[in-house]
Image (cartoon, rainbow, N blue to C red):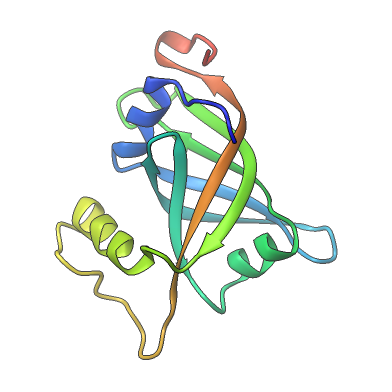
Length: 138
């Protein structure tokens, strides 16, 4: 079980947070992608689809780093280190929730025929970065 997230990190993730996630390719090279972030309790999460590089990388090596930047204070950011789990459970409802938050739409409009959405949940091992007023996250 991961560590508890500071409330300020949860607030950042719930505020239309764009996250940059770093995974590792099978050859060891890093892969970085921007995603819409979400949080469920102390579990940061994001949505993607099967066939993309992120879920394949994470199934091969679950280590992940996610960074998110505050919209209100661009110098405030969190870097979340942890282990990822990829699941289809709740993925369709989650992408619609994110479409509402980020696009103001009730349903995600870019689904492809036959696409399988997946939810990536992160078991947090540590949080780094700087918070409001540029103080380190506690």
